[in-house]
Length: 303
Image (cartoon, rainbow, N blue to C red; front, side, top):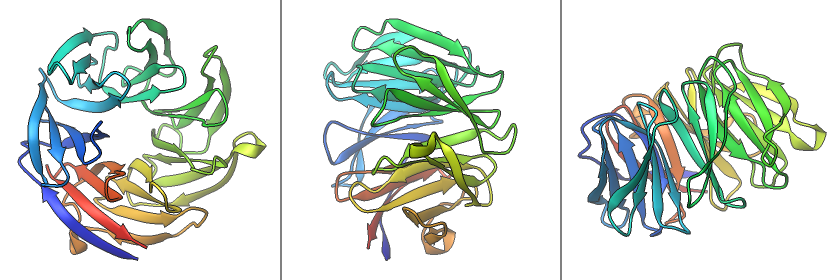
């Protein structure tokens, strides 16, 4: 495996917390501590423009391709709806009482899910943005969600170390999964592309592997990093995935194997501080990473 640092995107004035794809294949968005949401060109490797200037930092971004909307979750619990064609904010919702850590789009049902540090999640219709459901799961944070590809289920990672399997039609809690250390938040979730497993990563620095055929049976749990895991992303076409951590490293894994293939750290061009977010782009299969060192790094992973 060959790992090449293609470029380092600079110019942001604060930690970067979120990355998102664009409707244009060679572009991405970032959200950061400097209160700007910036659009970047991965061909020219430079910023295009700020698409939003917020009253506070942004922690979550989600692009809705059908309507060319960018949804932004901020530090104070606000959810901004940006009309990218019009180039302006068209809605602002202040349902959550604390930071929105994640926003995901349920394409099948045309809904978005917002998750907050206030311990709740909310379900909104798109494009009308009617509130369909709002529920508190824990006194602690809820940080991540993943939609099961073959069933009407989603899994939400909670600050108490548990994960809740929820019916996406009725919002009934089906299963309470316990695999991470108690009160060590589950920060990252991803279903494998083959639909056989769920992988979770937590503040306990461990990856947990759950077998879907056996009702989310915990089949393995491994020490994967030295500190909290914040991001899990799969390669667009190869059987590998990447994890990013507060320990400043990115690790590349082969699906089904319990040891990393490679580690990207400061010695080979990696980050100086916490890796907060990863994005595996369809454009040239670039792996994009960002974190507290204010940089966005573009990697080429060749197998």
